[in-house]
Length: 200
Image (cartoon, rainbow, N blue to C red):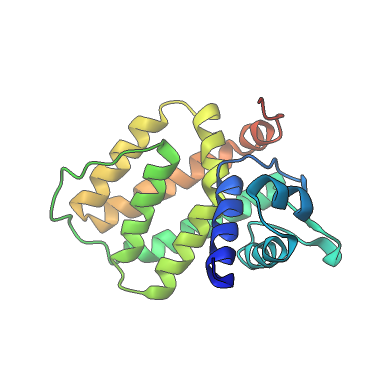
């Protein structure tokens, strides 16, 4: 396998571990241990961790090793607010869907990420699309915790999808505001759930 292909495999494997929540918030990441787990040498593991640090999925505090970011309540509020601002900007360009019966499969957090990416893609702005992709990645584990702490999320996301499909920019802006305000109000419970130990 070429060095480039090895790096991409290692990067993809570690990123998926982070998105799946296999590494708990605040946990140190030991490159040697990760390497043994995914059958890779330490060099591509370190290279992948540096890239993931640039993507803000990993932290390297004071350049002293790597760890999973630990979200405080204030940091999560800030992240929600930024996500809302970015999507609010993108929503100004949303268009009615050509097929109002689009079928989505996967978890609520995956469906949410797909819907928000659709909003970004409507802008035809590569920068907005890249920003929403990054936010989707950073919020994936958070959205999984939301499912455990907020009631009726499936109905909420279905309603949001209907508004996106309709292409009503005013209604979408209002729906996005409600979506983010609801989560900001529940930050304490969401962070509490994130900090619970993972059952294996």
